[in-house]
Image (cartoon, rainbow, N blue to C red):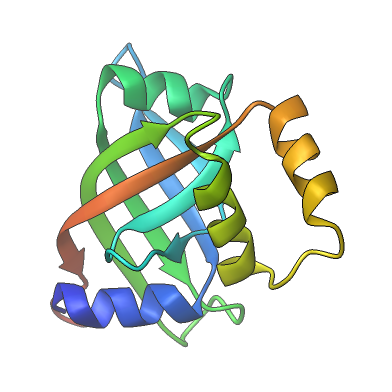
Length: 137
């Protein structure tokens, strides 16, 4: 699978599991709701204090498996890449963009912005270096 195919799948499906590396070398898995921004990066929101953020600040390598709502038998994609973390206040408008792509319009954008601040939200941006699967079976 090439990166363009992966991006198309990721723009339509928003259920995934993000893998990051713990300080001990073990793998941390986190359920996430990814989207794709206009620059072709995978975008994910999280809290500043989450383990995945601490892990990515130390080691930006990330793997993400995204699947359809049906989960079994109907398609999935894995991407590998490097993540950057955008913190508030710079993250605010990208967080609004993420919400629109995954959930649609919010009923009160001022309330949404206050919530993002109180929850200390950040935005992860992953540049895809590899996409798969490359073969079935």
